[in-house]
Amino acid sequence: MPGKRVCAKCALLFLLLGLCACPLEENGKARDDMDLAEAAMEEQDTGDAEMYFLRYLRKNPNGDRRWDVWQNLLSIALDIRQDKAIAKDYLEIMLEEFAADAGRKREISLQLALLCGEMRFFSRAEALWEALAADPGLGVEEKALAYREMAYGFLRRLEFRPAAEVLEHCLQLKAGADRTADCYYALAQTQTLLEDPAAAEAALQNMLTLEGLSEDRRTAGIFMLSEVVEQQNRPAEARRLLESIMRAYPNSKVIEIRLGSLAKQKPQPPAPARARTGGAAGRRSE
Image (cartoon, rainbow, N blue to C red):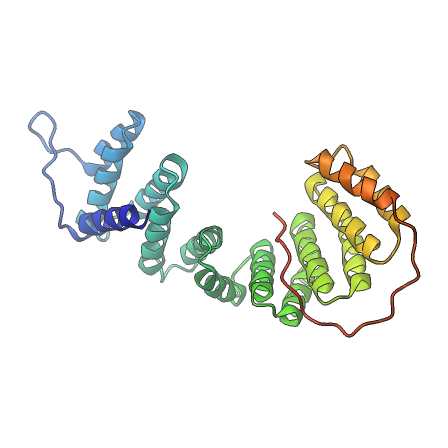
């Protein structure tokens, strides 16, 4: 709820700015905030742990354990509280704090970009992915991810050709099998939206020849290939493809329904070529 998020964010800012300083003692003696926080974590008292971690940040603007403290706060927000809004606020603050540290800035940006995408803050996510893609120090796997995410940004704006161009850059990176497969899959989606099923089929065939491809991506690729083949009036081939993944596909009922529909179809002569036009962006693969 918006009100709850505002209150939580205000509490965070008050603690960081020192506007909520509470004297916390044990047996009459003040203890080190990190010791208190770690003890609270061991006792699974996340409320106290957060308070001590935040107080450490406020009292130690140049502390050598600030990075570890932020990681603990993120873990509490995401893994325990499952509060993405607070985690996003933490990451935005971290991005400013560690702006001069290229490696940590990169790590924060990646996590923040993914989180913004999950939360549907697409403009913010796209800006982060664009900056990451331009970072010469970014690794090949992460750069391929950035290109793929940039492509999905173009697809959301119905800009299909720029999406295809970005994905071609992704495929030139020679990333690992699964990351490369993701870019081929996105390219096939894009070519389908450009009403070029032959190009979509070629992208999927290239995807399926990758060595070391994970089973879930192979299954997704074959399923989409069956759709593309069906679009080209080859129902028998589409049926064979679907039958090959009957056991592997997460929802066998979907396969059964499609097989039933294909069984009623007969090959048709190719439709006359049409001018390519844009369409609504398809669903993104996970």
